[in-house]
Length: 513
Image (cartoon, rainbow, N blue to C red; front, side):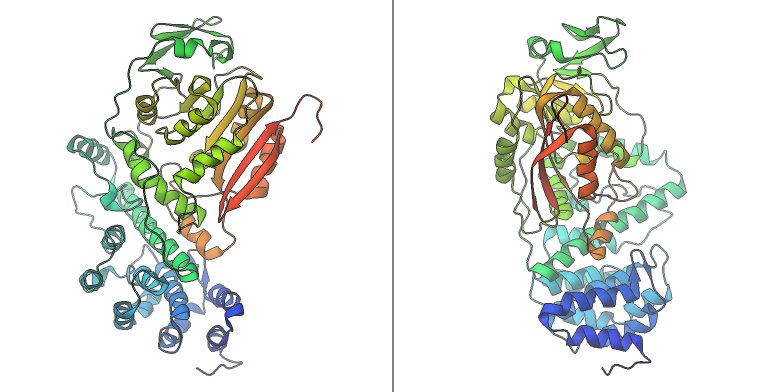
């Protein structure tokens, strides 16, 4: 293709085609920026599409992979509308995409990139899936592709919505759970159902695109293994009240701030006389949420904790960490917890404990008699209690921790801050600092935003219960600034991909930043 000063599209494409390997990514980002904005396209996009499709026959496999990602982004820019000019222009190259897909080395970048590209054409569902079956896609990839190619049917009396991450077939729900699911869907109006359908489509395309983009840049992703396996049907025992009494001095009533006395079946406030129930070793300060949205309802099904550890979390940390080669293994995490959590005297709080997979690592590191687990969802803590019956659990949110000032020796929030509302992060850090003793540590593992606009777009297009408008990770400097404002000094920091690990210490009174 010959470039021309009067043809900016041809010039940009030529620059990308001719770029030496050391300058390829820079040339690609220039090309993308000229044609695409996150979730939208530029006026140059439509005339560029024929050039991009023609280019697939002129470049090597690496550049073909890059172009397949770009063409997919352009096809997606008009979603959820169907039949737009830009998407139709991209779809015109479908024969070429399918031919390339058949020949592409299985599991490598080009194959994943083309899978992402062809996932945008529900009108060609049967053709695309026929090729997918020829190629023998991995089970999870096939399930995402199948869902991406399903058009919305407004006449479907029982639509499958809200269950697509990390892939639809991962949701092995019991019939009673499905009945709960269907009952809640019946409370939604037609507009809400359609909006959730399009969010689900966005999520499966985004996950497919994120995995493909990593593969184009880095090679074959490694198979995903569960971190650990929470019991599918947790049955936590009733607890000896002593597991709470040994921490009685640190608890405070969240309503009046006075101390609590623990008795069989409840904790009583010494000040306002409020009583908080204790059931199966779980102290309830917060009642379960009401109907707070479809995906939030799904978090309450009995087998959810098993699903999170077996399916959701291993995929989530690869997606948000840009670590599709799996370096952040469960063994690696347990080792980092043992290295980073260095408590002062006093109890150690596992904040956002979830099903308890890493509460176990924490208990092994500091001793189970020091650990208290906290989460908003009893379904999660039931699994933790089943696995660690000697560890007491607290059901509440993190914005108003039920502990006195300067009472905790350490707090861990492992793979947890992003589970909060984004705007709650800084206030929660202030609460953590309030409760920590001077010299006590706060240890956390979370994710920062990608500086690459393409990958950042993919992550932001995933819709989950804590982020129904799309995932938002952290600006790391802002994150550390919130810690500093709370009086927590970062003592150790490391990262792998977009994942970061921080250990911060509460300053002693009068200690300067």
